[in-house]
Each structure stands twice: as C-alpha cells, then as structure tokens.
Length: 282
Image (cartoon, rainbow, N blue to C red):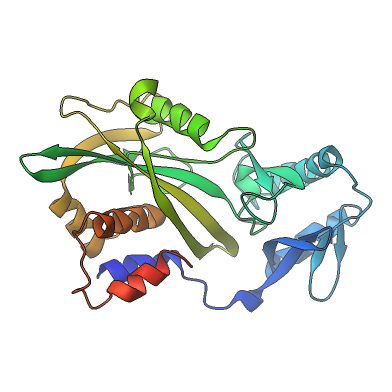
C-alpha cells in the first residue's frame, strides 16, 4: 500500500460512459448510472428521457417547483431502498460552487444523481517538542456512512444557506466542541477534488481544506454523537496509518496527504509525488 493507492481510491471512476448526463436548462448538473435510469421513468412528468441525457422537465420553471418535485422523487427512492433515509440536510444543485443553483436536493440523494457536493475538512494539529501531532476522530459505529473509520478532526458537507465560515463554526461546535473564537482561526489552505464511484453512484466532489493549530491543552469533545473518540497522534503515525492501511475514510486520507505535502513531510523524492499532486485535483 502507499499514499498513491489512497489517491487512486478517491479517483476510482474507470468508465464515465456508464453514466448519462443529468441536465437542467441545458446545463449538466450531474451523472446518472444507466442501470438506475429505469427507476426514474415512474416520474415522466418530472424528467424527460433522451438517448444521451436525462433532463429535468422544462415545465418546472422555478427553484421552488423543482425542489418540491425532486423532493417527491427522493421520498420514493428512500422508501424503495435506492438511497439511505433522508437526512433533511439540503444541498444546492448547480454547475459549480459559485454558480446560481437550480434547486436543492436532500443530501442522501446527491450521489445517486451524480451531483457535485462540497464540504469542509479541518486538520486540527498541535506543535509539541518540535513535532506535529494531529487530532484524529473515529466515526461512530452507528453512522450510516463509513462507520468506525478514521476521520479528520472536523468535517461536514456544505448545505444550502450557510457560508463556509458559518459551516466551520457549526461543525466545529457540533463535532469537537471548539468555541467560535478558536474556530475562526482555521486557515483556508486549498481545495481537493475527486471522482469516486460506489454502488453505481458518483461523487464528483470538492473539499475545502483548512488547518487549525490548537493549544496544547485543548481536547476536542464530540457533541452530536457522530464521533466515537478523538486521539492525538504524532504526524509520523498518521502518515503510516494513511499509507499502509485503509483505516481512514477514503477522502479523509486525501486530506491527510495534502497536509503532509504542505507541511514538508511528503517530499518530491517520493516517486509518486507528481501523480499524487495531480490526483488531489482531478
């Protein structure tokens, strides 16, 4: 195993032709697997079906009309087991983070429609005795996605109606009991993009990455039940776990690798260095 293996895991889409474009007002907003298309034909008043694309009906003219129509589809998909139960966390559906959204969709259905999701990932670290230590979370065993896997200190999707800063403050409070004054010190250090396929669902996602250096006497405490425990580990140990195991959630491993590069711990002498860098920005 290697760091490059972790990056390849994030970008495991080998054949995009298995998916058909999902189009709204002439713009592609997602990708739908061919084997899932027949499920949507029940809703021929909401979707239009063509040989090479599926379009949202042009009869749905407004943001609210589209959102309500898609919500009916999402309820059906949850009832029939095509997606997880609704999360009641709504994501914008658009051509990109800075574009005006066409409508919003429950988070549980986003990857089924191959819509690009965005999120924040915060590396919490401490400098002790000239060495970096990282706060690592372990996801709760009852989480619906990737239970028990290791995670970045704070991470969460970017829902409708919140700025990145507002989301940082919310997620820091919920996941690690980080007070606002401290959470505001999180530094934006870049973004990571990837294309991940799982169970005929596509995640062409973007993570906004932040570093937060914490006082040595601070201990994160989970408040929303989504994290089983936190551990403060030497960065050398985090590097070993990331490279040699699959203990980290797939995209959190990529956030770790980005941290190692930026902090001069993973160097160009590594023969995979250039390919790793490319893989962080698919």
